[in-house]
Length: 377
Image (cartoon, rainbow, N blue to C red; front, side, top):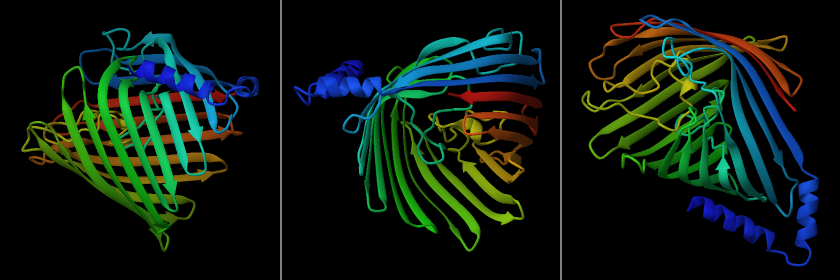
């Protein structure tokens, strides 16, 4: 049904200007550009337990084409392929610890977009990132990013931005496809650099399992007298459970670095259910070791300290987490994350980072490391 709607949209576009459109569309196609993005990454995962430490050397290749602008419209097609040169990891061999980069090949994006001064619209398979990707993101860290078969609209008037998206399918990082009926609404009002207020409602339904969860919330952020702040609150409801979300962060500039302290709570419903963020870019939150991609039924608290700066074009980032259970207060461990990266011009980058998780009352000690190089053409 969704693919039929996409085809009808393309036909409507092609027939909207009889007589002159055909040549104009050809000009737009001929004036387009090739897209090429490759990333080579070496990754290790040494998790305490019965399986062997994992080693992966993978190459992510995206190749595509984007047309030139025709009366605000563009066509984009992009394929994504993941190849493994070293495949000693659980996505390919269960004897090893996991690395979430299976080998595969798929259409990454296939979309028609429209852009004007106040309206953006995208129809088709696309990348969607809302706010800081805490609730909706593309999981861009993994070699196969998460995309959506969707219709997305963004309307801007003065200092208000309104985004609505209807999702028909989620194309996950493991090359899995999930049929959904999701409605995403996000409204942001930027009063000034000191204050932005965002309200959101994400109504999610898995068509295969009939599982539903509705998340309603709001956030504020800004910068006042050199202090950077953000605060978010949300309430989530399923057919059986309710849980809340709270995030607070305060930062300041200290010399060449920016330093942040934060506290995040993914709440629990009496130990029976933990607040979930199924569409999020989860790797960016609660530690790079990815120990809490699924929130425990006891919930999760994450108190962290982060410092980030740049020295001679080299980005340095360090982050320390203390994890606990929202229900019962159990110690869920701690983690130290470190990153060094450098952009080479506007189209290339290299980096190295590590995650060192130490278990608490529960969990397993885990050390991970990544080394990568990326180039866009």
